[in-house]
Amino acid sequence: MNPTALMIMLLSLAIGTTMTLMSHHWLLAWIGLEINTLAIIPLMTKTPHPRAIEAATKYFLTQASASALILFSATMNAWKTGEWSITLLSDPYTITLSMALMMKLGLAPLHFWLPEVIQGIPLSTGLILSTWQKIAPMTLLLQISHLTDLKLLITMGLTSILIGGWGGINQTQLRKIMAFSSIGHLGWMVLILKFNPQLTLFNFLLYITMTAAMFFSLMSISSTKISEISSSWPKSPILVTTIMLVLLSLAGLPPLTGFSPKLLIILELAKQNTLLLASVTMLASLLALFFYLRLTYVMILTLPPHIPPSSTHWRTTKNSPLTATMTTLALLIFPLSPTFLLII
Image (spheres, rainbow, N blue to C red):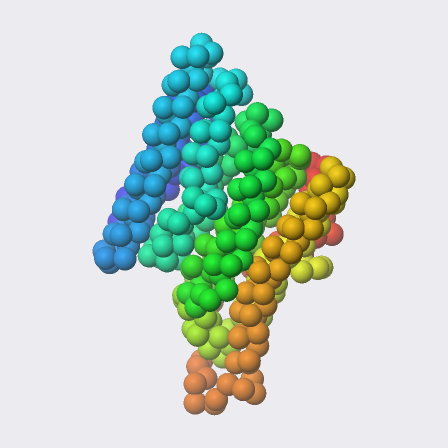
């Protein structure tokens, strides 16, 4: 892609998200979401492949439907209340706006577009879609969290955790695995949204850090399949080792970064006297833990001395400082979790 066009698209993404973050008005927030949607579509189709065109079309139709629902609900709410304020919602329109934002995020059962779209686009665009594009809808959800129906959030959260784990089990494509991982992590955030919005924000920041570290690492070794990542040890043994650790961090194993949000969410659910919900959540998360461990196991099986000498390569992979920074944060933030929570 032309560097000037790429700069314009990235600048538009930044402007759209910033506009939504700074707005107290539903119409301005909707405009920011629309700018975000339109800016990422050229990035999806920068490689003119039928899969990329299909992914961009699915993404556009889904996001346009969610945006239309947001605009119609906000208009009807303004007609009823006389105000466009984001925090002033009347009863029927809170649910429709929440569902539209969850559709933009890709929460189950409104998740069907997300794995197919991420599978059809390059890793760099998948990184933007999995991290930056979720900031604006999540911010709006956080602003209306005190008005959202608790039963809706619990249902969507548990469904997302289950589908995020179940859908990733039989996948061999790394981009689809990251899509189902995103669905599962967003389920954890929505589950705790009504009880403790600050904890949702903390979980979201760590999710962005771990997902960005995983995508940067995959971009460094140019791997999109499990078979490719498992044969990358001769090219970059340190990077493959960190990828395995980031996967375990995404799974939520101690003492890595991903353990801290899960621990704090379970403690918060127990504090709210919802022990059954906490137990079901932990059992549902075992599905995701299984496919993360399966991925790690597949990679371990191909480490030396199991790898044949004929398939070795020169170690020419260059690790960028950004990749090193993100992987370090994705692995070692756990001891600093109380400090970050106090800041939030």
